[in-house]
Every structure is written in structure tokens, then in C-alpha cells.
Length: 111
Image 1: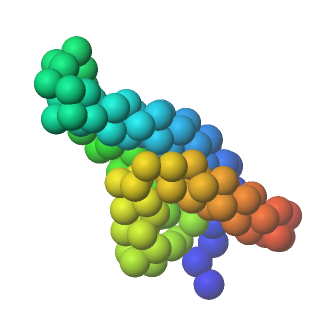
Image 2: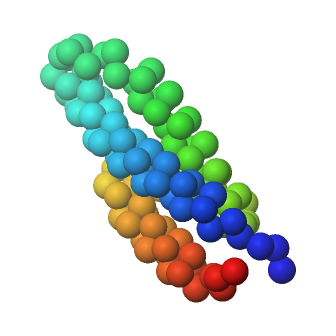
């Protein structure tokens, strides 16, 4: 059995929580940008897609970091990453994954 470094995993979880929240908000702003742009020909948020893309890459890195720390399979990491592409789903997945990781870390044997 491969041992999980609880300290590294807790740090990765904190980074993941922050990244998931920021990307969730950013995705909602992106949806607003698209509604304004295509629905109302308003270009007030035309600058937003590029920063959102960068933030999404940070979310991908945070998910991979947590996934490797917790020894997840690649499939689980991909599903968590894809959740960041659906408005509001990233908030739900963040809560679910955070709870799961916290339970797993609590179940680890102490040294």
C-alpha cells in the first residue's frame, strides 16, 4: 500500500478548495459575459475569457495536485476537472470532494 502524506494532502486540499471556488465564480462571470455579448451585444466583459482560462488551468493544477497527493486514479481526476466546466457543479463537487478527502485523512493511522 502506498502511504499518503497527510500534511501534503491537507495543503493540496486547501489549494483545491480555493481554486474550485474561484473557478466556480469565474465560470458564472463567463456565462454572464456570453449572455451580454451574444444576447445584448454588450462588450463590457469581453476581456474576461482569457483570465478565466488561466484560472481554469490553476484549477486543473490544483485538482492534479490533490489527486496525486490522495493517490486517485486518472479517471477521478478527469471527472473532477470536468466538473469545473459546468456552472454551479464545481461548488457541489468541491464540497463533496473536500468531505471525502477530510474523511479519508481522518481515517489514516497516526504515526
